[in-house]
Amino acid sequence: MPDPAVPPTPPVPLDALLARADLGLRRIAGPADPAVVVHWAHTSEMADPYPYLLGGELLLSAGVHVPDGAGAGYFDAYVSRIVAAGGAALGFGVAPVHDTVPGALVEACEMHGLPLVEVPPRTTFSAVARALWQLMAQARTAELRRVTEAQQSLATAAARPDPVPSVLQQLARRLGGRAVLYGPEGTRLAGAGPEPGEEVRTALAKLAEVVRPPSPGHLRTPSPGHPRTPSPEDPRPPSAGHTRASSPGHRVGSGPDAPAGSPGDLHADLAARPSSASDTVAGVRLVAHALGNGEGFVLGTAAPQRDAGDHTIASVAAVLLSLLTGERHSGSGAGRSSALVRLLLGAAPAQVAPLLGGDRWRVVHGRPEGRAAPDPVTASALGAALGSSLVDVAGEVVRVLVPDGRAVERVPGWTLGVSAAAAPRDWPAADTQAARALARARATRAPLLRHGDRPTALTDLVPPAEADAHARALLAPIEQSPALVDTLRTWLSLHGSWDRTAVALDVHRNTVRQRIARCAALLDADLDDPDVRMELWFALRRT
Figure 1 (tube, one colour):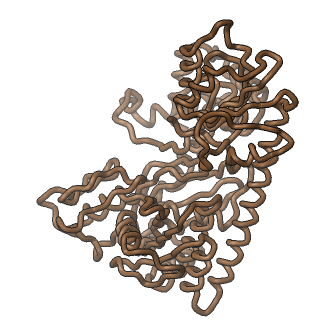
Figure 2 (cartoon, one colour):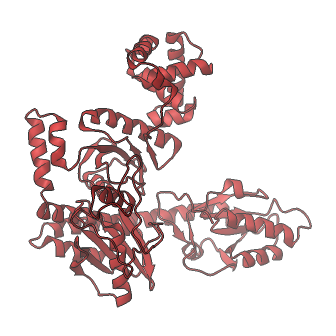
């Protein structure tokens, strides 16, 4: 079953909808599983609703599509397509087409394990959808209230004289489970909440090893008796040896001739390890978060159930613990402070970059899903997920500087654009690359897009000076209008799509049409001609 493209609201248990006495809904087939949830309601009278479903729907139908004399074969095919699309349940309206729910449909739903709900004549499909939205709004309000209260209590705990134990205690109480802070060597430094059984404790410690970013002094090769344990978020299979994945564009020492603890080993481990991982053992939900200070600290949680907002609450705690452990146990805070002072006093970025811990960095632009602008806590949570504390909130976008050796993966709830690795003198260009990658990601609805390295192309055969001169001459009529240049570049990169260009630029599609028409007039060019588009794209890549 495909994963549903869920909306930014909590799902509603089907049982909660059935409990609404004003609707009079009745489950007549399928599993009576309290874990069945509904993400939205959709009405369709198509014989094959598969192309119109996203997954997680309560599909509502009055059976208009059912032909006369339809038998078990028709209903079996109909229900199987709903299940294949990820539908959560089927609601069948009684009257005016059918006096009762067809028996063959009941049997098909029972066989395929799809909950079948009878909708009485007095209940309209609109009333069912409205009740679902009301329940979603109530759940969303409760989740936001819970998260807000947890954030406040965690922030208060971080200001206490014993901040680390206090934060862990609050986190354990909010999650209803156990919270543990692991040190760089894997030892348990502090914990709070009910102590779980030995099986759960061991599994949580192993999960922490999956996400722990090693430093050169802590780099270890697992012995055959202690293999690396994969998790659902870490697809690498276990092996007797220590297989490392390298980051793109870097040659690292990972073979038998590479010395243990070499820079190649460190880069490979940083690139291969996720920032968080989860598992379920003995019915307990386990989650491990690598803290963003890069010193090897890990936050582990074990809770008997997963409630809405748990991920956000744990992320806030991870940010606070990153600050509390990073500033006390490493010189990173002093290094950042020194770098800032030198920049303010006129030093070049290349001179202060070594104080931040690396020579080559990637710029990441992130934008949260939805329309809410990111706040400092949300931005810090993104930085912690990416493993960096160098975070800047710029309006609706969060910018993060990430060391080249650390992998940048998708972060739930965020759309990300990633630049190529760059030296300090090229950071402004990397910032532009990340901004353009984010615009394309939003336009194409991709969770993450990178400004990828590419092999030598035909454009590389033209001497740079001649290419720049040609680009300036070709784009001279519009160079005084940055809006026209940016619109033309985005429009060409998205293959002339008006709608996706409008999304990428945050303007109306008619504005895009007007700007492209203006470009065509000023350039005196036919923008429908592929040769013209190629020439313009070549020129725009030089600017």
